[in-house]
Amino acid sequence: MGNVKEKRAFYEYVRYAYRLFLGLLFRRHVQKCGKMFRVCGKVHRSELKNTNLVIGNHVLLHAGVGFYLDAPGATVEIGDKTFINRRTEFMCKQHIRVGSHCAISWDVSIMDTDYHTIMDGRPNTKPVIIGDHVWIGCKATILKGVTIGDGAIVAAGSVVAHDVPPRTVVAGVPAKVVKTDVDWHL
Image (cartoon, rainbow, N blue to C red; front, side, top):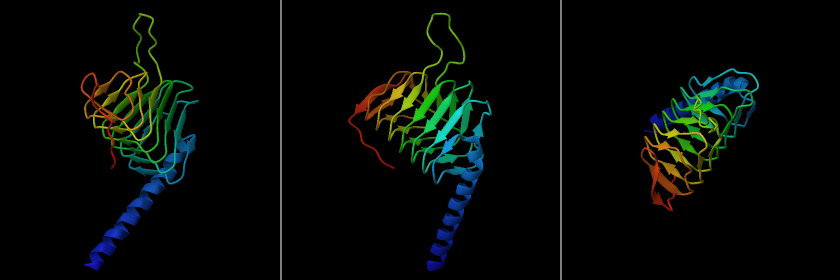
C-alpha cells in the first residue's frame, strides 16, 4: 500500500515541477510575474507592443487560457493565488484586473470592450474590476465596465452586464442577484 502512495506522491511532485517549468517559459510574455507561477499547457497571448500582462504569486493557468491585449497600453492584472481554468479568455483594450484568491472556471469570457462602436455616444471600452476571492462559474461572460465585489459568486452561464455587490450570488442572462451574504471556499 505504501508503494502506491509513494508513486502517487512522486507523480504529483513531477507534475508540479513541470507546471513550474512551463510557467518559467511563459514569463517571456509577461511584464511582471510573481513567484511559483504555474502553467498547465499552452497559454495564448497576443504579441502587440506596449501592452502589459501582470501576474501575481502562486497563480495557476490551465491550457488554452488566452490573453488578447488589443490596444497599446492595454493591461491585464491577475492577483496572487488565483486559478484560471481551461479556455478562459481575456479580451482587453484598456484594463482588466482580477483580484487575489479567485477561482475562474473554464470557458469564461472577460472583456473590457465591445470591439465595435454604436453611434450613440457611449464608450465602447470600460475597465473590468474583479475583486478578491471571487468565483466565476463555467461559460460566464463578464462585460465591459463591470465591477465584481469581494467574495461574490457568478453562476455558470451568466452574462454579467452590471456591477455585482460583494458576497452575493448572481445568475442568469442578464445576471441578477439570487442570494446575498454568501461565503465560499474550495
